[in-house]
Length: 433
Image (cartoon, rainbow, N blue to C red):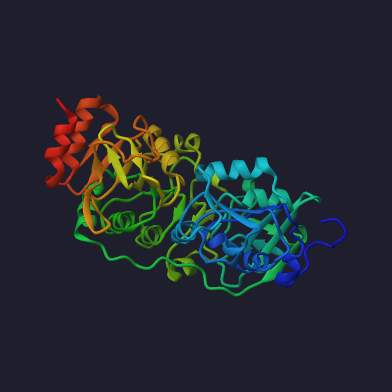
């Protein structure tokens, strides 16, 4: 940053004063969001034409009510949904997790923000539990004199190593344009009670996981229950290559199940962000067995094809009788985002001995009414998250089926058998033959 020495501590208002009208501001998602910096930017009443590019807001930021600030989110959560419904300037960016990194590198936004640990004795700021899609853009902005890289230091952030070829999940304080201090509790996921339906789904998935598998877990109660069952099972010699590092991954390690002889990044479990309990964050702090890598080093299907017996486990909102998966948008409502869904479904199904598994309960409650999640056709306005030609295993509490070798009529019939019995008659009629 021309005219100002790098690496100095700033007050939030001083850091926000460096933002200009017309800037695009990129930052991490979930626990990678610098709450203090974003709030300080929102307090600038003179700003106009600001675009904030991020995902999964963890705080109802003041900038959501700022007429000069537009939020573009690649992954919706409850805050984005509510703000949009209340008329806020909130838009969804249709891209996957890896795609957001590519976009941020291509756009070269003038301002990139990050949440980090305090500097260590040698001056290194660590990105902790959130490398994700903003790590590489932050490093590039820090090294460009015409751009702005601002860090928010949180003493509660665990320090987690990376790999040398990807920058070790850190940046030197002398490279950043300034940093602010904010002691803020990290976002945690509350423990979810496992419903009987989730247990039944997890039990069916257990039949698909072999000794020596490499595992990826999505978010939610079902992946968590599967990890718990694997940790308590005789299955071992496992690897972990997962977008998200969860409590389930910790449980597998503590049970002695993880050897990480997986064919890529051997010897360590890798992820691009972590989300879970405080126990998870304490376990991750300084843990040499886990590394955080940029999303391009984790989510690329070309990398998944190198993994031994790679099994991806993810959820969905609905699956139609053609095998199309809706996991982020139903009808006109944006629920979440593409994330790594399609990438991991594709990569795992193409890995040697690999399996991609999409799990969902057979019914859902919408506006107080029970509906089938196996549907003849996706509702009007629904966006397909993962196309039918990439989908392999689909699992409900009523069964598991590999769609990948089934022609259209046969796969439709197989999906009807996964539906709740109350809805099968109508679904069979829709098959038509």
